[in-house]
Image 1: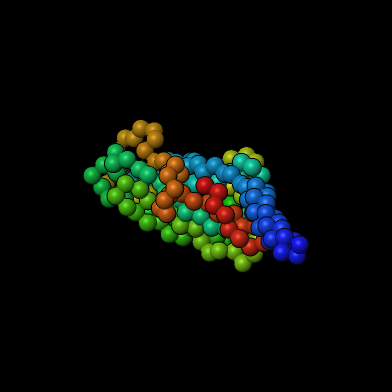
Image 2: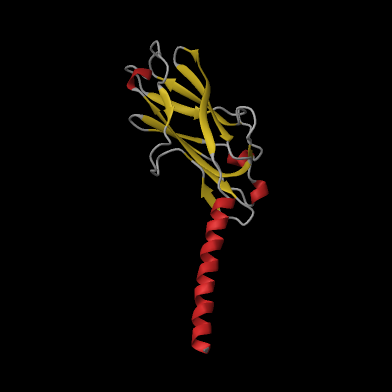
Length: 181
């Protein structure tokens, strides 16, 4: 009888642990939308674009992020692209989370988020209202004048789960990160 009770308790513990994981993953489920806005030429060789994140399932605290922006070869013409983060163009409440790095590859560039917050409340709140929260403004420089462009030459890649794709992570009060995008 005692052996049966022990087996039952062991199975009950495992079942409770699985139920807890299922409930917490549903309870902490978040979604968001990444958009590129306000793209414009400021002169023949410099283009700016803002990166926004909008929470689509309620506000959340940002833990970390990276943004992969694909571009077509038409955007650079015969030139070479480089980029910087424009200071003062972020709505993040924690200044240490503002991205500082833009890295270029053959057909895309990546913008890396800043420092990880020490706690949930130290993370910037990503808004679910309006157009969301502006993460940063990126200034793209071309060694030659940008050619006359058509739409959709810059696209944020989120479709494929790879380390280099756009990723937004939320932080919760029990101090764990979970991917949103």
